[in-house]
Image (cartoon, rainbow, N blue to C red; front, side):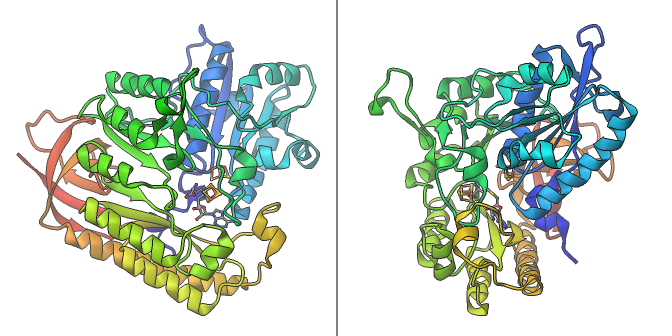
Length: 476
Ligand code: SAH
Ligand code: SF4
Ligand code: F3S
């Protein structure tokens, strides 16, 4: 059995979550929209931009799709299964639409970008198709679709960062928020569809990022996660500025960390080739920059890494892990791993298992290879590892990760950590759930008589664990 707590497969981890911040005031909003998001954090952050655009147009968010005039699904194309999930969901919307003529269905995100107008041919119920860089045109598209015309805008942009749009926080717990700092990806990992669905890399105006983070802090948020497909290549040159005025990712991290020592800063994702010593030194210098690095390895075999076009070797990656351990003792390292990429042999697979042992990941997102149309791998290589072999290797990867997680978490027993309280534990309102700087989930009883609330920091002594959760009690 796959342990979902550990695998947290990207396109499944939050699937089916629908969002609505409030029951919209009918006096403010005459019409309602419902939005469901799939895929990575970038998509969830984009849905919050979409909500802001729609609010301005007089659409309020609803959690109840039956009462919606507009249904949006923000889609992911990363693996075939992610797309299948979306197709299945669309058949549910079909039933609803039959009962409610006039209701519009829109497809947003990466699958919209990948399939473009083909979507309208394949899925007759879809009225609107909008790619990730075209959300500003939503009001016009919705308008046109209301008059019965099917509409598509999948233009990718070299500039769009939605910098000036204040996202409407949809499903936030009021403690943590995502802040998008860049869009697109210039890497060409051969397995990956993202460069085709999200376009070229571009960095968002640093001033607008700091303003958004400051605003969040003032509203009571205590954690921001800076988001991008490849955050380490963040590079922003202010208008009329020169290279000398450029803001690097390390500079940006520092600026966000300086907002307040009580604001935790996280970031995702780092490409191993781009995370610099500068970033590591900045992380070391600020206690509130969380000691957790997501460093997707993908494979432990240099030969496979080359075919994947990851631009580093096994040895080079191990050197990066060493450097993190040296400059940031106690820092958590997590990874993404693909089992069964084109031509992967048993020896390559063993190298993946051994690099996991070397890196001692606290958590990994693990997948078997899924060929994506249009990618370099699909055009150049044969998807020749049989499905049962892919699944068996993935299972071995998962078992290795489960063991490593349990070993790592067991080492935390006896330690005391500063924990940011996220809210009530799901299992009991008598317990808090929070996270350490290393992003490990901690459950602990509420202290009798203490006035703690979510968003507070507490010291927790760890006394027990599973492979995905720490347990403890508050110490003064
Ligand atoms: N930008 C991030 C990753 C985005 S996609 C990065 O470079 O780290 C998230 C993860 O999905 C990837 O790291 C990879 O492990 C996995 N993935 C991407 N394409 C895939 C495919 N075709 N088959 C299986 N897994 C894939
Ligand atoms: Fe895809 Fe590679 Fe870009 Fe990540 S860095 S989004 S895996 S192409
Ligand atoms: Fe999926 Fe697009 Fe993110 S393909 S993983 S939603 S960038």
